[in-house]
Length: 192
Image (cartoon, rainbow, N blue to C red; front, side, top):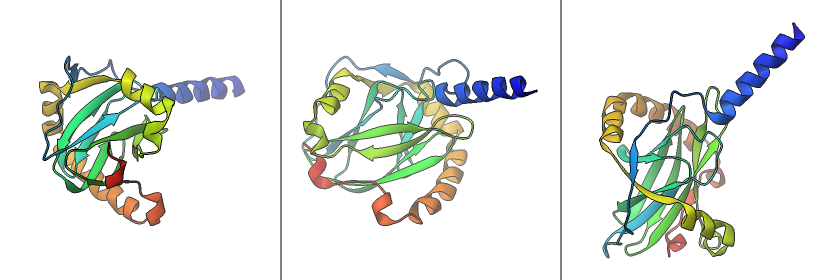
């Protein structure tokens, strides 16, 4: 009996660490050229350098607007209007990050996996101006492939719109109940 329990514990732990999904969805394609920053916009890269839950794709949103999926070791560019934003990441749950963006600046947001009940959950973490100066972060940025959504990503977003809004309603209330210093913010001066 104890051996059976130990085996089940290992299986559950492995599923949580590596994601329990069917074969990897093909929701993005590489971009061969650099993204040109439009002068009156802000460029935000969502980057995912951590391998935890590498088979799970994290869907990112600007409020209720689908931006795209961020797979492991990839970066997804998003040309945003300057000003205040509420970014959301969705998988098994939803999490949020506020942002204040300036025109003509480039920002980076880490998509951070963490253990969920059945598969990886994600949070968003601002890459600060000081972090951008570190070798570790520069390597993440340089080594990640730039991607864009394909039609499958937009179909997923359309098919799952209601589910995403339900998760947003539940988890945004929880996020707002946190102390202010526990709610991540990408600050205007974090851009380069």
